[in-house]
Length: 397
Image 1 (spheres, rainbow, N blue to C red):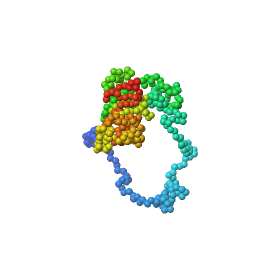
Image 2 (image 1 turned 180 degrees about the horizontal axis):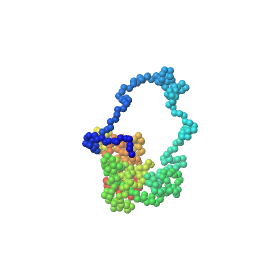
Image 3 (image 1 turned 135 degrees about the horizontal axis):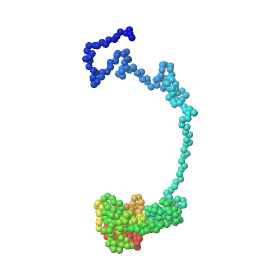
Image 4 (image 1 turned 120 degrees about the horizontal axis):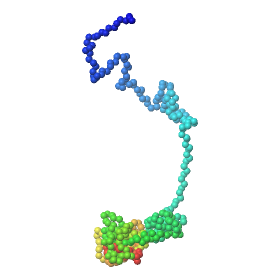
């Protein structure tokens, strides 16, 4: 079979055999793009911007050309019938569109609240614990204290423990009771009260009656086995011997200032404290007071330390008995008499702070020594200074 196509011949180029193969580790060159049509250049940020329109003064209409409705106008009110319309030229309004009645997602309208009524004037109710109510009821703890059962603090403790009955029912803290209510306490309360102690201390100078102050120790720190009076330790009251629990809750029933000495009562029994320092207490306290006549003060001229009785005016002694006032309150009558030429004997039924010293200052006397020797029917006796003893069962204030 023959064909009309001529035979193809292979042409060899000189030097083709000497061409080196491509290096696979050689870096590749980026293809060269053919030049295309020119592209528009972008405007640079540093190109000059067109000039801004100068700001117009306040009140000048801002909008389109003259004669066109301004967007805002200072010559027309912004509310009322003649107010200038708000929005732009396309009719868009800045106010939100009114809600449609068929909007299912619209929140329900809140009902209009009626004005709150004026508060009613509350009637004045006095403190029931102090003056009682119209039926004469008072708080239970005060009623128990008035009956001499215990102190108010003890009454609250007994009520909390369920040891108090009112008309046969357990009492409640703070409840008011009628005057004819039957108040009874359980044996547990009596047993606890029987274990309370009352201590008589001959307080030395330099100790305070209450809490420690100004670097001075409290008189209660003297209560302990080493300082118990030997006569009391040999024959203890009611067979009672000192125990550490006798110092718990021990409080002074009355005051005796730091520069004074003598009889100081410390007790755990609220009945004793109420008897001595209660509002209606009338227990006598007897003092022996050594004085100097100092009409110009203790550091002034004319101080006389001996035979003060001979030069002290009798009318000033009468003022000590009755006629002086402290803290703008008149003092109750007192018994004042000379024990010896340099010593006075005071018998008071009240105990204001530094009362005897302040009374003497008003009549030209200066106190150089003060000792309390009796409270009620209990006397200091031969109890040494700094020692103490228990109150006996046959003693009472």
